[in-house]
Length: 517
Image 1 (cartoon, rainbow, N blue to C red):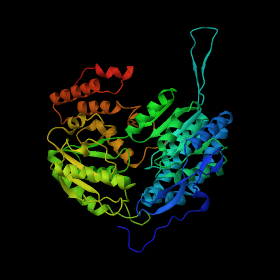
Image 2: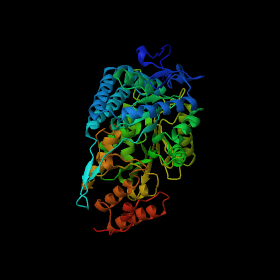
Image 3: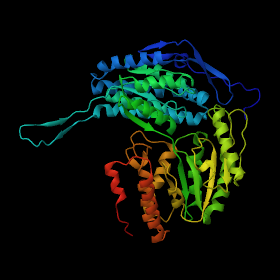
Image 4: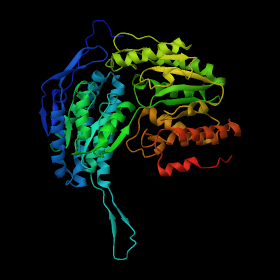
């Protein structure tokens, strides 16, 4: 995989390769350091300050102090500073992309795409900062006026994942700063360099001290740092992207001080192919939605439900596409499309899921082997059943399990309580263009200015959207008999009523409606 004798070195401009924490406008060292490794080679590329609870508390205090002055900045002033930050990201996009490739493993082309994506949030929120409008409400009393003013909530703790080490920070911090909030960022232990480079550029852009803080830490210190960021009474808001299990822990920590919280948690997206689908389009969609970042995105298709009539043809074309388009290697090599997984634990998880599937009767059509380090062959499995681990848990790797469905694949999809995105291909469902649009938008990027709820499904805030989509699919699909439609809708309702998820009052209307053909 890695060409013999070639040494890959991280060559970026010195100011962007920061290894200390960034608190109150100063670069601060901690008592110890932790290594950052190139996941493709296992070699150490930097040693970063291992911040602990003390540094996290200092960052929160600095952010709280800065909040009182930052919120007084005019919308135009905040807008100008965010725009300068955006301009600096675009100016240094090559170096920033190298940081992502070397600490995250992404192919360089994908890393450049992430920097453009990352910068787009700063551009968008720099413009939206000027448009934080209030409202005037008609008063029931003649001598009163009701005015609604929007105010920043305060210090925001931002905890981000390693798979988008730049974009997930600007997506959250851009919104916070535009609104007048200050932030403390805790980047993933695997990818702190991108966060620290963003801090350097924020400083160059003129963002005041204490407004943007970064506290990197090792895996061992993450729980104690996270506890400070979620329990400190000076923190008003938490924003987290990561696993569902970690999200639950953070919500529990935030409950005692009743903090506002935004959680973008793990997914288990189905990719559905009906007999009437255009196979070529379905294969293109499958390749894009599964193998981006080697399968390490929260909106990757995780299980593929294919109707029997098209199943064999789909597998044949998909296998050929994998052979022709996927090339493993170091992300710095031109032509690489599949980099390593983030670490050996991630590779072991994929191997475990493959082994479990094979032991239960699945057949490996492509790949299936773990290679050097954390590299994993892109793997295609056939004969997959719903009792296999790969259909029940998020994989986060280049594993594509295909389930043959005799009945409508939508019915099989509805059996899961973990669906967050729906990718569907069916030429006969004329009204389902929006669902195909979900696929194309998700497999590339969620645009910064996207406001369509069906395109921005987040597991906590929009957990019922998938059920609405499934019901719509069932009612509009001409390939299904009325009895199948009714049975499917009943299944949806049963799932809603027996689910442990909370249902808001306005959503309970879903539990009482008539099916009209």
